[in-house]
Length: 342
Picture 1: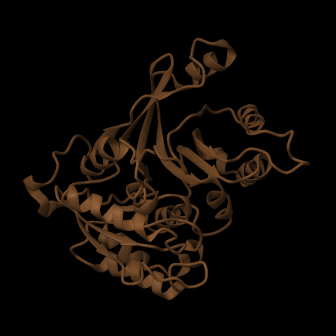
Picture 2: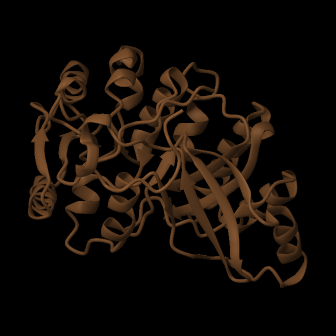
């Protein structure tokens, strides 16, 4: 895969907001997000139809496409963030202007349903995008995560960045699982980071919108699904051969994924994880702070990541080759810290 790197954000960026999926259920949260960005020196531009509602969606398919393309073509917009997720992006994938998206090289930010957009853009253009917080549920939340300031912005303004330490469910000195993980990671394991919401990743199998990633580091999260349904999605990826080119799995937050149906109640998520670990000869690292939770990392989809074990109880992610300084930014941009554009 030939990777195309987006431009990193300047010191006082202009953020374009659109709602490519579900309608805004809490318009006040969007206002709070806009206030947050304005107070931190960002200029904010809204898509024309961002506050519309058509059935479940934030406007018709045509209106949502127009908003996204409007922000792609606007020369003053430095990055595009989804206002919220929900459902609706898979309806838009055949109609996106991938040539314009690739040429603009703007960071595209979001998670949940936006997984479909991240993976389609990577598959069709090679452009790196960013699985991360969204406007209304994250920046519009009354109790914002410290990761917004400590991780989101530093990653988007520098050419390399590292995550905080992430706690393992066991130490690498504990039992067979610890010994296996220590052997698998060694002095560091590196690959191309990709993934997102498990349902969306599985549903794109067999379509032109699932990227073919070699030496992949696959991150996954889910919300409101039964454990057996989660395993069914994982088996879809397994039978399709997706795991054949995956070097490691980063297991994110599976929020509200406890068994609820009477016939499925005995089968828990822990059993799904255990089965997957025995099925695949690759490391599975749990507790990734990403998903439908307050504290989430920003993850470059298509960028490089190196996994290390800095101490027996933690792992850490080191990101690189996910963005470059725009040539016309010069010294006004954040100081580069690593790799250059290919």
